[in-house]
Length: 247
Ligand code: SAH
Ligand code: DHB
Ligand code: MG
Image 1 (tube, rainbow, N blue to C red):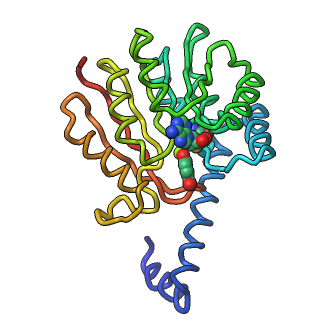
Image 2 (cartoon, rainbow, N blue to C red):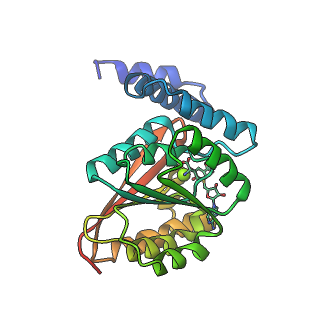
Image 3 (spheres, helix red, strand yellow):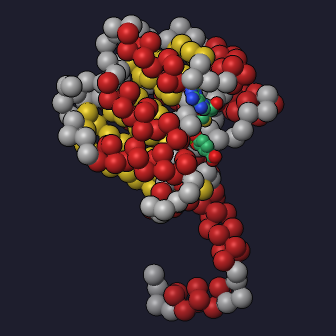
């Protein structure tokens, strides 16, 4: 910071309410997200169409941002993932980012409770030419996960948890069961504007994330951290865990 910059900042803030400050911060986070996306995320008519059709179908715009999608894609590539499990599909936006990291004989299973979301996602996934490797399963994740475990398939290489946050402790437990050494488990929305640091929060979603964090922290078979993020989706974060031992 150049000399005097702090003072100029203070002068600028005189008469500014907390609410206005938050709006200013959000505007800047969004501008920086756009700047980064322009640099590192190519124009992508298929992803644009996925968001457009999701919005047209009335789905809420709670998908990951473009640069978060790119990060998920890169993490799956770095892992060399051949199989991915996603919990929470919505319109398939993060699904497409993740599935594009897979080889032609790869497999992604994504779980979605809302049949309307699943229908939109399937169309978006078909347009992305990924129907051959992506399977959208309709139902509550807690009903489907035991079935997947009973299918006796190989463990997944990467698991992305992004459905109802009060289910996160159970989803992490299932994710671990469906993992092997080297599996990467990622959970979205684990900071929630900072609310996660409030042990007394009355929000069941916050408590869900906190209970998952305790499971992760006390689990000897994973190595984990959480990175808090700001951007067009506000202030939030990603938990990333690596499974370090088989069962
Ligand atoms: N991963 C998506 C966003 C998912 S939003 C993306 O970034 O593009 C969360 C989704 O989880 C919603 O579509 C919601 O319908 C779904 N969901 C909520 N509860 C669920 C449950 N119990 N089982 C499966 N899906 C659930
Ligand atoms: C919200 C955001 C998400 O990424 C999600 O998976 C669920 C909800 C939200 O902003 O409410
Ligand atoms: Mg999310």
